[in-house]
Length: 77
Figure 1 (spheres, rainbow, N blue to C red):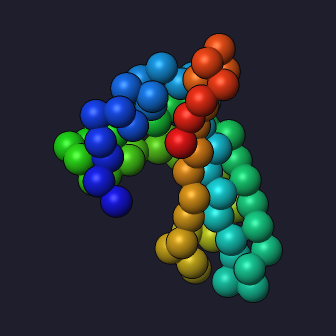
Figure 2: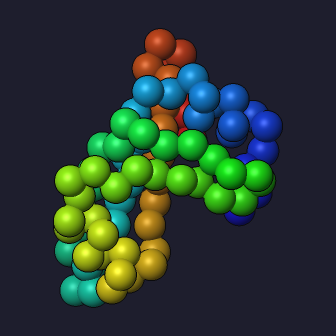
């Protein structure tokens, strides 16, 4: 997915994002992340801080969902 300028602006205004993963057995895990950014137009970078289940899940199942919201505007992606 291309990260548009509109999405980049929204990311820059957000304080937290949530990274959702699932284990190989499809057990969901959602973890808040405070440090995230984008690179060019197609990469989202998320800091791995004390998230052993998230890392384990991504190694087993590369499907993830990331969401972020500007809490004052109540809008996000």
